Length: 218
Image 1 (cartoon, rainbow, N blue to C red):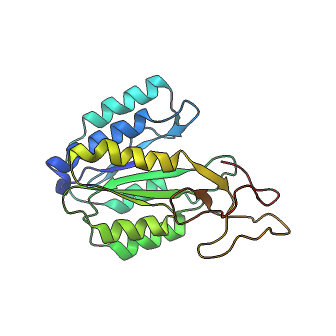
Image 2 (tube, rainbow, N blue to C red; image 1 turned 60 degrees about the horizontal axis):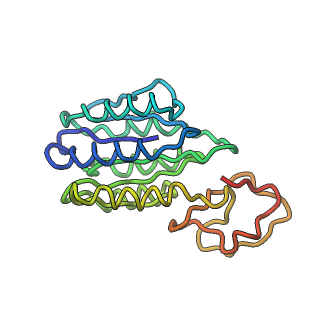
Image 3 (cartoon, rainbow, N blue to C red; image 1 turned 45 degrees about the horizontal axis):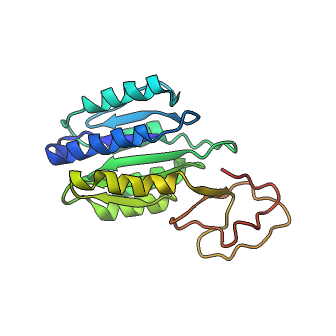
């Protein structure tokens, strides 16, 4: 799932960076992936009514749609999060959300609460766009979303920063890991809900070769 900020604060270099980063992200999808794209400004709208297979035709259509995006209007981020976060759980898939924005919002507490309440087993990865993004908000949102924060300061950095992000997204180690700061111990029964382990994120399993019975590889 991709969310892109097209509010007026993104006008200029920021929206160019966002389009470049999102187009690159779409082309990194595998055929077995499913995806959707949500844009938000004064309102939020999804490209598809539901997540679609990442077929060549669907990805090409999404890239063309992204290339036509332009900045205008206000910043109603809650509407985009409402569309993206359904609070659901799926043992068979790792659901990852990439959120591209400059973070220019005034209702941070409300948004943090929404993430906490509706995240489910999704992971939220924030991508800061522009010369002066709201890094505090995006770091905290990524922390609440059990993801990571990536900063892109100029167009020339898009490929390198997005490649680093996708290296993490494409390398979830295990679906089933301990809470942050705790030492992994083999439980007597598999947990009902644990975060997916992702290299270079706050969530990791110290010894991937020792996995509790019932844990699923992503």
